[in-house]
Image 1 (cartoon, one colour):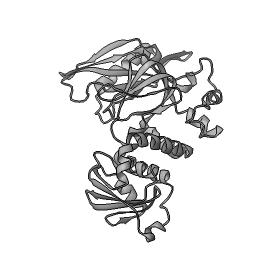
Image 2: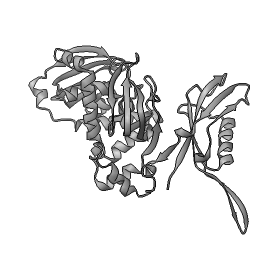
Image 3: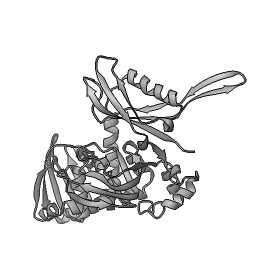
Image 4: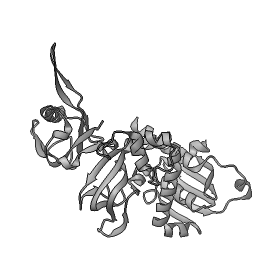
Length: 362
């Protein structure tokens, strides 16, 4: 069975207190009139995903629902522009049929067999970490989207929304000056850095040639990592490789000690860089609630302190901090060198990020 969404993007705002330009509304479901011998019944399964951290405007929700009722299914909604101006302000939304999204069952035009699709995807490096049963489960969470040449999939500075896997095509990773950093092809992944760190997207991804991607929504990403432990190691290696490339100079400076701010390099990146480069020493931090420290031995975390907290609880608390200063001191005394690890590094990191994410949701 296929399933699709229609995306309406805000293209103009005139005094609206709720929404901003480029906000997106996603509509899914059906609106059907069923006739039988006892009469007719109207059934609507409309689901409207609002832009994150935005209030709901019931007038606009009603307008979007009316469009679904008019066309019965989201895949029948044509290209169109709608306006909402019932409260002495106005926004204009644009819908392009080419932006419709389908579940991964639609990758193969005539196949609705998840097992078959899982087999087709098993050669991608991200999926090789999963056994057959886990792969089928993970595939059921994926969605598919197609982009045309010169489209931007994500833009630098935006909040991270999805994890993307390139199914076919070619994209360019460009910096704020439009200079190409690298190109990504079939099977490669992007979007994970901002989802894990919580920071804005660090680069723009622009389509070079028609590209089809699989994606999973950001709000489900950390839950997926917890559900499929083998993916934790995959992303640990992926993040480490990317951090190694972007922080070569930083890594060299760590060898002799380095000072910086969490605005420049948040805790998740600091920890990843020290882990990947197998550093031994103490990361000292001056944070909102006082001094903190994390000890590394060969990249593994052996101790953490923050206020009255020790061990894992201190590590998790430091991970949630957004502002402060840090300094790395190479080397550890013999007694610290003999301390056991607090746990597997990636498991610590994922558990900490999950806790941060839960606090934000509350």
